[in-house]
Image (cartoon, rainbow, N blue to C red; front, top):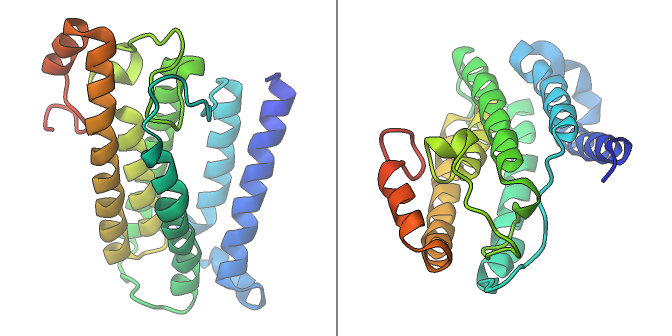
Length: 224
């Protein structure tokens, strides 16, 4: 995909996300959206990261490759995506109406910083994998074992990035509890994928992957 198309795609997705966010907040109360600086900065930061990702030529393929475990794709579309959609709509609505909001401002700043770092981690993880990075639990044609970039420290940094993004956005909207619950939900979902993915990778790369697995953490650097 040429650079202009990647940039246009990234900006269009960002505009869609922004419209959903502001609509859930309420157009009649739109002026109050900017009252909290971390919340006001979320969309500009998101746009900057989206442009950075496009410049880095990062893209998540939908290719099933070979040996795809298709139930994970079905579970994403039938369960995970609807839950994440409701979560994303609820956050600005709840913040706008002061539902379950944590008053301390530090949580919003922690959320913005966490979102920024996590989005950057996911971008660099996709970049390290290259064109073989796919939403499918599968082995791609010509699949190469990525052990550079973020993969030097953890085996599934892109998944860690998703968990951090979920927690970060939740906290930008000052919803501490929803952030924890949604992060746990996504973490459990990721664990089911990791189990199947690592079986496929062992089957494809054998001892080479086992050695890599023994010297790296699964999700949290130096911890887990």
